[in-house]
Length: 244
Length: 248
Ligand SMILES: Nc1ncnc2c1ncn2[C@@H]1O[C@H](COP(=O)(O)OP(=O)(O)OP(=O)(O)O)[C@@H](O)[C@H]1O
Ligand SMILES: [Mg+2]
Figure 1 (cartoon, rainbow over the protein chains, first blue to last red):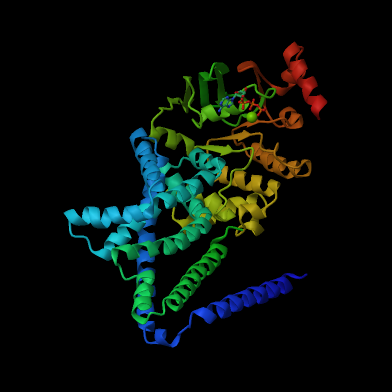
Figure 2 (figure 1 turned 120 degrees about the vertical axis):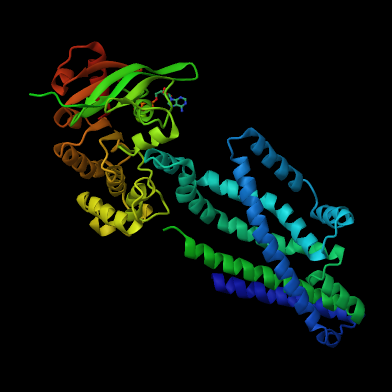
């Protein structure tokens, strides 16, 4: 069977399965899509908030990640251990708990805006993973090329900026895009601090219209579209920057 | 004939890895225009010696003198020294995300503080001389091994070094590609470039080098002209030459 044929077959099978589930559920649950329509603005707001949250958090997570990666590759023992400790902490802590700690913990001491509490939690958390991605990228640069830099008389910082980082960055793009997708999905957890992200908005619409199932189906669709778009853009970027 | 100036002196270089003494008080002088073939069996310490010279490996003891001055082990003097010493690697070690022309221009820009546009002109000139005028815009992965090594040589020459160190420049190449690289190296020697070349190419050592340094077990066992070396009756040298011809 050709590739296209098998894709079409799979599509038909999935569509059939969905239609079957939908009609079985309709027998006991009267779907009411029309009640959702006047709330579309809430969904759009939610998408915008989730998007802003994810993009700002990613930008900060990249900065955190660079610091973590540099610390873990540092010659200074204290920095190296600090980097390791950081990664250990955030990789062993549920994101939900981080969000609660930042918003309710620090929030009880200083006044933290919900949005920024979400951004800070996500960037601290994802920064640990981004740091690991960068470190793997830095380690993947052939040591012979660094040596060539040394032999021509470059300083360590010049070797880093002219030889290591440009390659490490390219190597890191695919996993970094994967991490952005994860970040978008993880960001749904900020709805516990009543931040009006996509998930929170869908819950609101659900309770207000009583069309809960419908609202969550739309929610699921929105996440799928957002994450797939990010992956698509990532693949284009990867191809653009590829070294022949 | 007047003796040429000594460019580089090695004095009692020693290096151990763990408990293994890889270099044992290696000393010799390199004069202007010398082409020194460093020979020795595998594990004799040839690569270690070359890397100790420009501090890619820090020697445990001994000194390197460059034009009569001791090379201090500080960041700045090592950098200044390296910019005057070209290094050609066995596995080329080109920078894979840079175009060929930028690979060669890089030392000029970063160490020589030349502007990119000017550096590229000089780089293009050097690449022409190794027969790669049509590959300026290619990336390293798009070249054959022989072409990559010629880029490596152009890169080593771009700072107009006083001496070039080459570590088995042809041993990672297909036999059919050895010739093109050897021709470039032969031309350098005829232009009077001072070189230390670690090689297994006996023909090169016989006909192009003016001196052979034979390393045996981390020691300079012989330091003489190629004629003396290849006619030597010493057991170690004879054994080395027999082993070598057995491989080839
Ligand atoms: N980084 C290192 N750590 C430990 N031992 C090393 C290291 N580099 C080299 N050695 C050891 O030092 C000895 C000399 O190595 P070297 O690479 O200088 O030999 P060589 O003469 O260049 O050999 P070849 O002809 O195989 O390239 C070998 O026994 C090798 O195992
Ligand atoms: Mg070697």
